[in-house]
Image 1 (cartoon, rainbow, N blue to C red):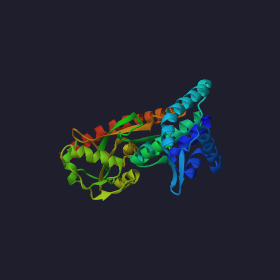
Image 2: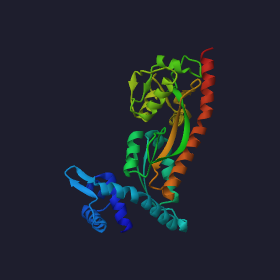
Image 3: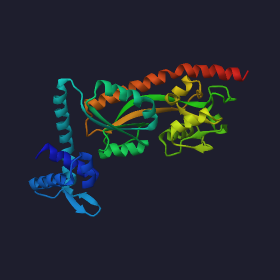
Image 4: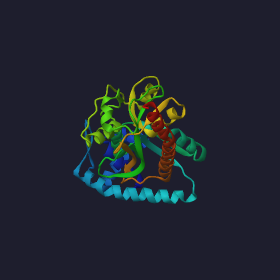
Length: 316
């Protein structure tokens, strides 16, 4: 039994398709099929039932997956430890990020890797939190940076950032409310928010529901970058993560106002399948993007304090 066969078997088990598993492993389908056949011959029993809908694991296949996964994880971790004794960081990172994390921190994180670790291959994609979780559990992603914490078996979580949500307007918009803005006042504002399938909207709705409140925004749009751009040239108002507003505040194109207690905070976390240890390259990527987001968040406090002073002046 070879390490390669274990990798091929677990990948096929998780994908349920020879085509998808071969694509994920970056090999041709006959090579995958041959190794699975050799493994089945060695074990003396079929691990999959070949059907028109895909590869369905047999009872022996299910048991083999449960037995092989811990062994495979330990072998891969041991191999990586030995490789990394040289001090060089290489390999491939396949990560998923919610757009609000990617837009703010990804460029500088990529810049760091290109300069300091050019041998690391990066493949990054965006998505909704639940979609990214599904891809992590399927093995398509090494890890994902998402909103909040979803309870899921085999999912390991690492906290990245606790971030305050702020009421955001264009610089020319005069908000006739004294900051900090009460949560119950949000319903009367001309709001544009993400739709209910968006992780950020879930955070907002959950926080308001805890106070017996509910929002029905006039406009819904899932691209937070477009919302931020729309605020700059209109009199609409939104509730957005502080880090997303940084450039607009620095340019003087936006204003941001804090919410009154208890406020609304979103927790950004990194999740990965606990059965698959992260490589040193992946751990470094997570560390760099975490520090970048934290730096951006610290820069917001100056502008928030200025908005408090502006709102008091406007109402006098």
